[in-house]
Length: 500
Image (spheres, rainbow, N blue to C red):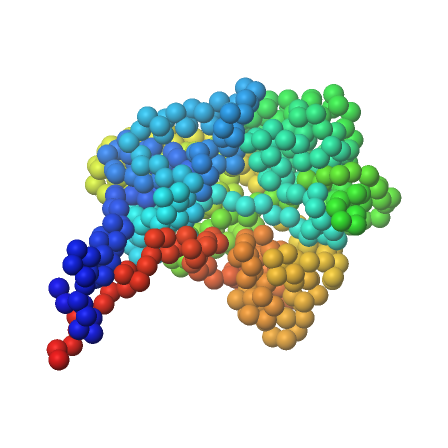
């Protein structure tokens, strides 16, 4: 083989083109029938259902074990007391271990394209998997409506607190305020007490009448209602002050959190007349619901709509989880907030639909297998709707954010700068990004986008008008060194030399 420019390779040394061809061959994509992104209750059940129907399935997740946020696995070697969540998560992981699903955990999926190609970085380097069908079960991320001091060390989200408590059995502080809305208030407060911390107060944006009004819907799931009652009893036994219709006005401290100011709010979430309470604490766990992680479906430009109850913009699906793009399915909280119970059934249904569309299940077998998850979905909707309403974003709370408060913490963009961008002509989220760099940091708008959109929508007229940031790869931050892997110059294709 002749080398470029007339040079010849030394005897016994492979030509650079041959070495590059060998490396490229080693990185050829793995092919399968179905790719599932996310191994929480939705994705894991989707993968199991499709695999049991005969499909070759590859399941990706960034975490080292399946379970998602609700059924999160503890850190290796950490003893965890028995609980319904630990039991459900353990059973799910055992089912996956006994299945034929190709489990690829500890992977960062940074690109999804083609019909369908997934690029990921994992312990062994770069991986590419291709399949004619893909299920997006990418879950949700938490929403924190900003307030002065929310970026101080010691202030963390409610969902982040559950990671500390479930995976590491660590309290987020010695003396902690738990604030926000929704069921995670009780989950986190009870967890802190269990790990030996002190809960200085629970500040709930909702009022007692909101919880009483939701009681009929919550009663449709007695097991979950009893679980919540158990947390409430633990909180009551510890004599934790529960401040209904209260929110965080500010977190204060020099280099770390030292105190929290709590103030009354009205039913819409705006601050109301009444005395403030100042609590000396070293921890604040705060959260105002969740936002669907719908970046993958947005990447493919599928039909979507804005649904405040479901957390924002979500893909439009048929009853079995199919999107408007053939071969692409969505389920779980990434397709609209409904909780773990709905996610489990919706995931199984999406997996069965993918198997049916692939020809692994005929119509009769599909309808028979789909009957059980469809019935579970019907039973769970009242409960999930009630919880979603509790966690829905309150526009008046966003309107109360002071002008100099940071909204995008990655790029240090304040509310005043967002509103100034509107004055300069920004009318949608992509224009806002261009004017301010809001959403251009490592989180790519996951944590600031919802609140920034609400602020811009208040000027433009509607959330539908301002839209969302355009989803683009990389979907997650990845190091260039990880993408390059074992690359060297021999990987560059070299054309044959021109004849002399």
